[in-house]
Image (tube, rainbow, N blue to C red):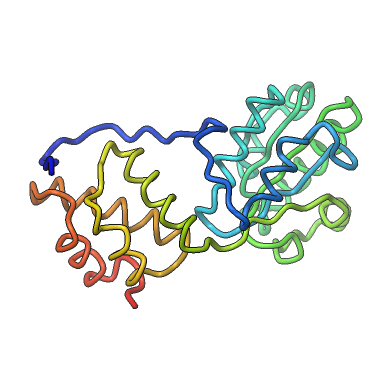
Length: 227
């Protein structure tokens, strides 16, 4: 087995359509993204837990629709009429729950994009009903939007996600690493991201290869919830 020592290689996050791992937990969301031209009302909400692949699917859709991607928190400084001249993806909408100005900007963007005959994708953690949007007109429009949810991963998908995250960092796991992690880590996308990042960091810092022993150290340090 080849060892990987002390190489601070760049992280390349693979976000092409072929890189997205389709499983029962996300198949409906993928199908709706691919069928975006037929969205009811020309808009869709993509919801799900942290690290579930919302950003990846947003980039897949943006490539297909020639859309611009903007963070909801950045809308207060954005030129909304210019954005509305094409399809738009607005990420992390719940982050503006306490920002009335950003909510107002999103409300105007929503109306302008649809009035111009373009499509709108909005993303956030959890269901729309829990986003905490306080602007009544915006909240009602979000609740009336087609929603696709990404669910928590099963074993097969979480295994594939771990392999992909390691691959993004140009790391090849030994055969026993993924089963070891699955039995001991919190079974979530967010935990997978955290544990892989920490494995990479400690491997570089200690000039040690990625092994089960290193994974046990990461889990014992509490970087994710051990079982």
